[in-house]
Amino acid sequence: MEALFGPFAEFGFLRRALAGCLALALSAPPLGVFLMLRRTSLTAEVLAHGVTPGIAAGYLLAGLSVPAMAAGGLVAGLLVAVGGGALARATGGREDAGLTALYLIALALGVTLVSLRGDTGDLTHLLFGQVLGVDDPALLLMAGVASLTLPALAVGWRPLAAECFDPDFARAQGLQGGWWQAGFLGLVVLNVLAAFQAMGTLMAVGLMMLPAVTARHWARHLGGMVLASVIIAVVAAVVGLLGSYHLDLPSGPAIVLAAGLLWVASVVAGPVDSMAARYLRRPHLAG
Image 1 (cartoon, rainbow, N blue to C red):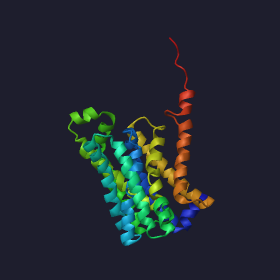
Image 2: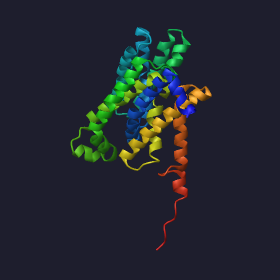
Image 3: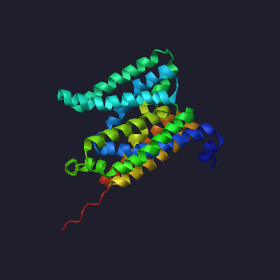
């Protein structure tokens, strides 16, 4: 009990980190489930890198100011999200190709802007985050994004689900998929920005996508996947922070590694579409 609860009871920075990670665990994994079902899982990674120049510009203008970096990252992320589709429509090419080009340029530009300050510590903070250094503005951003994301998903649940499973039905019902798509991508960008302070741009989607792809091995229906993804993310956050404290590991990567271990265990022995479920399944009785 001391090993489990002692660190959080003793250290305020660990309680703050836990609160921030729990907020991310509530809001980000459901978005990851929808991305996975739409077969656009890498979109989150693209947007995580796409916000980099905006965050870097906010940093250059105002230092380590969460509102400035969040505002800059939001603008950059939305430009990348909208730009990929606009390029595809203008040139007739594939949207994923345009997104790939934009996010690579954005990542290189962001790293270059931060490097202008000549401080490698700032570059490390940008790329890998510092979950144990979460301050009040960052914590408020995480909580605010979670408070916005959950009601927005509740409102958009039906059209988003319809677009995932039956796009033709969604169009026939006049659900205006383009507007829901834009709003959904906006929520993804906001959650990436909320995770940036803790996880950095390289791992900001760790708590979004790993619990989501793990959840498919624990449930067959959308609601069950969303619930499982949140539980998995909460477990990964707690285990990662405890592992970071007891084993002296970097906190952000420890959380992502904990989520990765849960994914491996689920792929091997989960109740749905796992290796065990496939190879140990009883053969059907003949006749």
